[in-house]
Length: 247
Image (cartoon, rainbow, N blue to C red; front, side, top):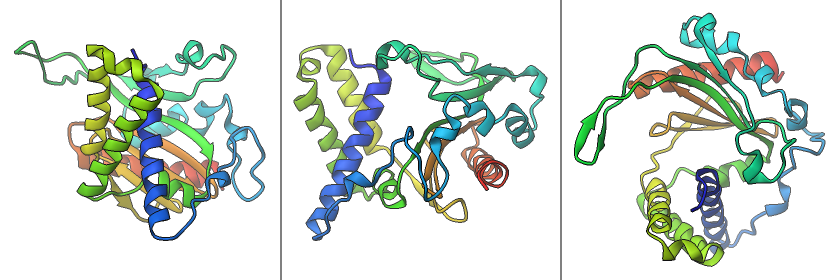
């Protein structure tokens, strides 16, 4: 079965390929080689390599507590490389840093026709820190029309068939494929102005993608069922990181 992280990578690849194909249809050539590796020096802006193994310094517990108003003494820090085996590099630093609070929050789920209300941690996190051009960022995280989302979902399904055809032969694999395509079709991104050089908010997953001086990073702010509050606090945190850590 395809791992969740692999599915997300393929989803983003589908969006990227779709965006590039759209640009090509307009007569523009995609500049795919402009993305700078996080392991190489970015001389034009902020270097992601400076934060390798130090994501907890880019987003500190103090910052997360300040934005949310939560007691930092009650936070649990989740900063481990949980994908080391899957990615094949046991010594690689963690790819994300999360701060969790147990504030008595629950969510409603329906399992086997029965409604349950399991406990749910409040979460503030950062991940996907890398060097990417502004142009590439906009291609990776486009704000799509319904027609464009449908085309991107079909691109994702095409990639599954071409790159992991074994998934189409199992019920679990087909479920993963349908889930991934469904995520693309249900994406509802919002362009955010005044944050870095570009930013896109995804309300369904409480995540903000930010581009600033060649650096791309993603913030998660899942502290309430109120999506507007999550968005407001995530934007506040992004501005704090840029002002305090990237200038």
